[in-house]
Length: 86
Image (tube, rainbow, N blue to C red):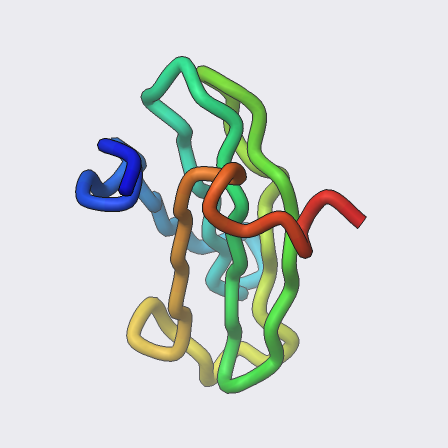
């Protein structure tokens, strides 16, 4: 078992409101490793790869009634999830 299997990557998810009152979220990768991630908004999951020391694109909710509680984010080391490489 690799050391990556036990450690959680250092990421941060930030939220903000747009000028038209939609909530949006962005994940920041604070590691030197590539990460496999997803952002889920009310059950709709978007998979993406996050490069070392980079920010993801902004993911915007589709309705103004959604807020930060309706978002879910997850990231792990890409080496542990080879299906993300496809």
